Amino acid sequence: MALSPLDIHNKDFDSRMRGYDKDQVNDFLAQIIKDYSAVLKQNEELEKSLAETNDKIKYFTDLKDALNQSIIVAQEAADKVKKNADQEADLITQQAEKNAQNLLTDATDKANRILSDATDKAKTINVQTEDLKRQTRVFRQRLQVMLESQLEVVKSPEWKDLLASSQEAPEYLDPAQGESPLDNTPEEPVHSEANDSSDGETRYTEIVFPTDEDVADAADTAVPTLPDAE
Image 1 (cartoon, rainbow, N blue to C red):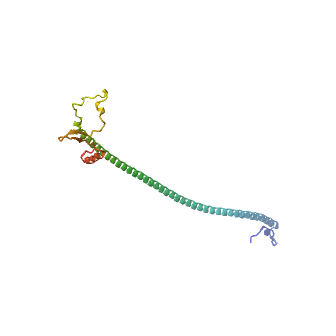
Image 2 (image 1 turned 90 degrees about the horizontal axis):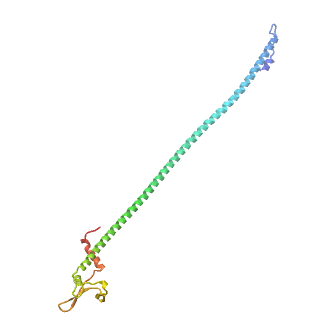
Image 3 (image 1 turned 120 degrees about the horizontal axis):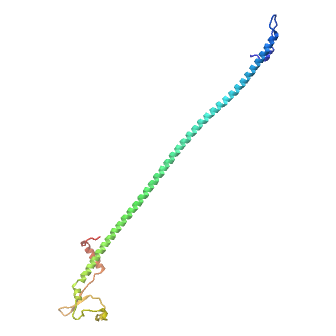
């Protein structure tokens, strides 16, 4: 056990002859007590400071461990956030690509439908145009046949004989000179010319004008032989 200043102060020494000077010994002991007390006090202060230092070291060590743990947790959180962000970005990209593909598909389908409808309409118009051309050609051919038929009727000998001038008929009739002698003639269509036959009976040559049905039949019969006109 270490000596204390009180132990040094209370220490008694035995007296002997020719021993040390008691006053000098006491003075020296007093100095020792003083120095030893100072050393003990300094030692206590050092121990106290060391304890405080150890507490601080422990605090900073704990703080360092907590910070390290926080850094680890923050790193893990950052990695998790980054992973989630990457996944979300991938999902957004995939959804955007899917939407773009759907829009492209819809636009393509719509364009194809529009093109198909336009093609069908164009085909229908072409068919209608060709049909109209065919009807026009048929009408033209029928009209041509009808006109040719009428022309043949006009050129017939019956008309020539009917329109031939006679000695009894005036050579020139002027409508401005009043009423013509022919005005009193009943207005009846001329169908024939009167001719006296050898047996004494009056016979008529009938001039028949073609009807629409006759013209149509004649056109159907004449269509293959007439040139095709556009």
